[in-house]
Every structure is written in C-alpha cells, then in structure tokens.
Length: 266
Length: 330
Image 1: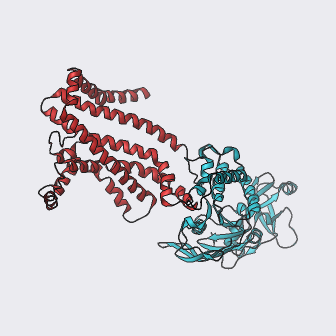
Image 2 (image 1 turned 90 degrees about the vertical axis):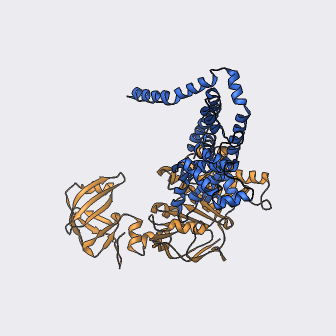
Image 3 (image 1 turned 180 degrees about the horizontal axis):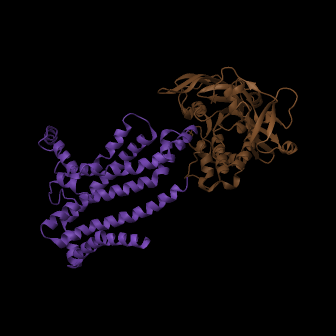
C-alpha cells in the first residue's frame, strides 16, 4: 500500500515534472555551450532579465509591507467588514491574470479618460515599465498576507499585550515581539512572492506591449523566441527561470525547516 | 497601593459582562477573584491593567483615577494564564524586557539592569536557567519567569490571570504556597483570578466571589466559606446536598451523619445507593424515603465501625444546615 502510493506519486512527478525539466535543459544545451551563451548574453535577453529583476525589486518589498499591514490589521484588531477584506486579499488568486492585466489596460490605457489624462501629462503606464510593475504587484499581492494571517492568528495577541503592560510602545512591540515571531513565515511568503514575480506571464503579457529590449520580461522573451522558431534560444532563456526556481525552492526548504523548529519553541 | 473599583459596567452587544461592580482592595492585600467561567472575573482583571475598557465606572489606584491612563503607563505587573513569554528571548532577556524598553532618560544602565534581573532570578529561584529559552522550561518554571518579568518593572499592583491553571496538580500546590510566601515577603497589592475554590481559600487574604458579571460576596476565606451570603456562593464553595423535599435545605456532605440505629431527635431514613472508599474519607450516596439523592462523607474509621453495605437502610441526622431565601440554582 505504502509502496503503491509512493510509486504513483513518483511516477506522477517523473512524468509531469522531471521529464519537462530534462527536455528543457536538453534543448537548452544540445546545440552546445556557445549557442547557449549567445542566447543568454543576447542584449534583448539581458534587458529582459533586468526588467524582470526590476519588477521583483519593486513588487516584493511593496507586497511585503502591504501583506504585513493587512495581516496585522486582520489578526490583531477588530473592525467591521473584516471578512470582506480577507476575501478581497484573495481576489488576485481567483481572477485570471489575463483579466487582471485587462483591468489595468482599461483603467490606464489611452482609451480611458484617466489613462488619456495621464498620458497627456507624460505618465505612461500601459505598454511601459510601470504597467508591468503594477500587474506584477497585483498578481503577487496575496502571498505574504496569506502566509502571515494564519500564523499571526494562531499566535494571538497575548505576547503583544504582555509587552504593552511592560511599558513597550507600538514600534518596540512590532520590532521586538511581533516581527521576530513571524520572521520565518514572512520570509516564506516573500520567497513564494518572488518566485511568482519571476515567472508571471499572463497579466504582464497583456500590459507589456512586447517591445523588445524595453518591455519584455524573461517569460515574455521566452514566448517571443519560441514563436520565432528560435527553440534553442527560447529554452536557454527558460533555463534561467528554472535556475531561479531551483534557488527559491532551496531557500524555501531551508525556511520551512526553520519555521518548523520555531513552532516547537513556543 | 490600594485599588478602588467603582460602578464598573461592561457589555458586549446584549450580553452583560460586568454589572455595576464595586470593590475595594487594600494596600498590600492579596485578593482572589473567584467564580465560574463567564462570571466576568478575567474581564475585571484586564480592566485593572487597562487591556479592556469599561463602558462606565472608575478605577482608582490610591487616589488616582486610572480610567484614562494607557496600559503602558499604568505600571501594572500582569501574569497571563499561558504566561505569554517571548519565545525568541532567553529567560534573562524576557525578564529584562520591561527595563530595556523604557525611554532612554528613565532607563537604567546596562549593569544596573543585569543586577536587577539577577536579583529577580534569585527571587524566583531560577538563577541557573538565565540563558535558557522558554521552551526549555517546565510549566512551573515558565510561570515563575512570567512573574519575575512582571515584577521587573516595579509594578504598583500585581495582577495574575489563572496563575496555576495550566499546571499539574502537584506543581500547582507547591507554587501556591510559594506565591503566598512571596506575597508575605513583598507585600505588593495583588489580585488573582481563579475558578478553583481551594486555591482561592488557601492563597488569598480576601476572596471576591463573582457570578454572571456581579459580585456575590466579598470576605475572608473563612467568611465566604462558613457564612455564604447566597445559595450560589454556598454551592460554589463545595459539594452540597439540596433537600428539595424540605424547602431547599442545604447541607455539606461532611455535615450529614449516618447512624445504623434510629437516633434520638430528628432523623430520616435512607437507603445506601453506592459507597466510594476514597482513602481517608468514604463517600456514601443515599436515597431518602422522600426521594432526595444525597451524599454523605464520613471518616474511614466511622465507616468501619458502622459496617455499612450497599442497599442497607440507615438513618441520617443533619449536624448543620443552611437555607437561603430567594433560592435559585446554578
């Protein structure tokens, strides 16, 4: 029974995870190291990597702050429409990323009055970098909050109350009590958020406009290369995302271990 | 520091948590708030600390009205039921916390803090555990760390929420006596919440019995035990038999006497339903002819001398009873 279940799980993993990975890496490297190097060091690819990293650097800290604030408000205070807010946080998970991208186009595009006004004043959002950053933030918003809410809920408010009776002010309570208690959960949320930022395709695809070397992220670059039958190049660039994913996976494993250790320590 | 609680009321929507509570706690007194769960005792304690806010009423520490004083300026030592120790800090750092978060102008020097924490560790007898983390401690040790942490800020009053609730029976008894001794030493005004009658009677100078958000009775342990002001208090303080057939007569099990032969004076007959030998005492369940189920407690020697058996017909006399007007049940 045990072996049967394990067999099924392993077979599933082999077919749906390992095989594509092997195919991808094979295709990336089968024309040789030089081709791979050329594809990866292509100026357009480098620009795409830079743009993706820029989106990550903008979206992750912002979502960390939003997520922290939302989780803090929801778990430590009582206010009306709290459940509504919790539902709202999940919205980016339930809405298709393409729809999310469309919303931004409708909101900030040249055909909306707000968009037209902003373009007239020199603020271009859609088909430009700000749009990509906005779309990325929207899609990855729930990760940190979702990770922290159950954790902070389970921890309750007793420790904060204890700190309060001992004379600590709000900032001291946050930095010395709350933050150390949720640090591994927060890091875990940040890692998941980063992973999703790196790989985001749908929403970004709608708002980017696919201007090569300017508004192409790594995943969009892969699509373009693939559509132009440059398979080796496409797979080579895709392999960059795979390495990024592997790195986050390792980090995630480490943090999970730490979180487990932290749970036993209360 | 004396505490005066004046007409405190608090309700959540339609549910009254506290109804016009008035209570005075003298300086240096150890007061127990005793009551079943939901009686409002923890709410009242949290209001003293400022963690909960009353709808109306006043709280005075000596002559200072505390209602508008925020928690962090009240200088109360609060020990939480589950201790709320900071898991990422050592025992030493937990205790030092209140000293380290003081504004720079009022903060002691590092050496002074060290000295004070070591003093407190000595007081709670945990000097050699200073560098441990809370999860490496037993329940009783955590409790003492929580107490030391609360004492570190030189509180004006000490408040304890179910201080022994999360401990096993043996440790609980030891800590109870220890807390009493500590109180003799420090003479700090202390209020603690409990639902355990024995605990309240053993530890406290005075006991305030609460029910449904109201104070039922305030008095010394012997007062509330021997001169209960209401049926509720009498029933809450210990096992009690109610003779429904005799206009609600209340009798403690150890105040019922069993006789094999019909005694002189008033007595009534009953049949033995069940006998429980509990070691030092024997508990006997009886069914009276009027249909009341009652419990009697007698010493093992007396039990042997009577030679009681199940289904025996015996006679009961009442050594002492209570009756209350306006009776209601809990």
